[in-house]
Length: 257
Image (cartoon, rainbow, N blue to C red; front, side, top):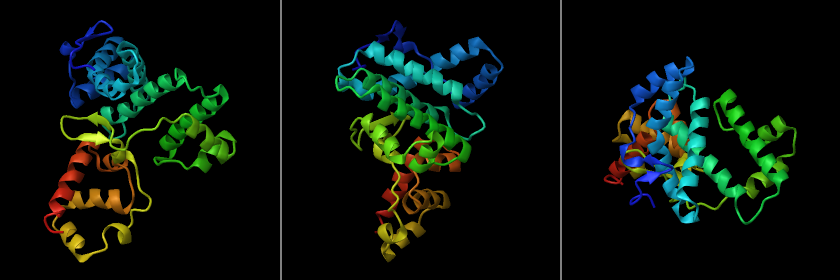
């Protein structure tokens, strides 16, 4: 979609700058101090992030310029809500928000209409989820979201189901200069316990040959059922790094299994 298109919304995508993590943190300091020029520079320095996200929606038949503008709204919301105190890369935080903004746009313009009341409940539930995650630093349960909104859990589930689009588990979400991050990489598995995943001596031997960080990542991912984003937040590296280390560790283990 974008390979042969250089200009989107009047922006020459071939000349967009790329900011390092250190540059972004320095700009955030100026942004929090009210520097409008720093905010503009930060937005422009992350437009490539928006471009990488909207490519996954190329088969929806939507105008690229429209998707780009909606994605920029998600980027701006991410900037406004990003907490530099958390040891998370901005791109890791921003990508889901950009995707969410585009999905809301597509749902609201979908020929299959979902009632306004259901959409309102679903959006309130998503906002409550974000609020509870910020307060408790973990994924809230449906019961907790329902209690926050003073609603029945069944109403929350029904509303959230109504606004969901089917997505392949192998659909790429983001590329960070290396292996792609897929939808399945962001899904936790509550059934991934010791007896279900590493129940043989050969597998234990493979684990023994990994370094401590690789062991920790695999343990959190497959013993504790944590998502890659949760692992990245706790260890203090990007989600893309977690993905690469996880794949490398599993590949290394296969030599001994």
